[in-house]
Length: 88
Image (cartoon, rainbow, N blue to C red):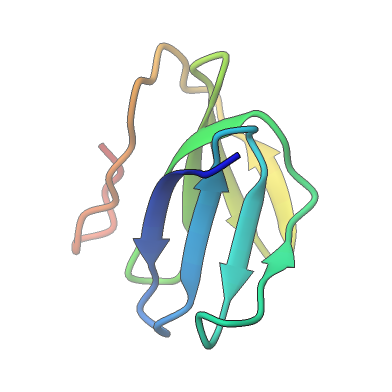
């Protein structure tokens, strides 16, 4: 189904969002692990390693300590995590 977005964290972990909404990560670019997520289309990784994702319903989510949590933000088309920790 292909990939919709990719992001690399400060630990060089690669994150991929599939066109089908799945999210995968890899430490080596060869072996991937799927997270328990669906419906995500855009990704960004902050300097602290927090993964941010935009859902197909334009909601903003974050992945911390192995789980996804929805934030109050909505109406999101994309996400970018700045070096100062702000999320755009």
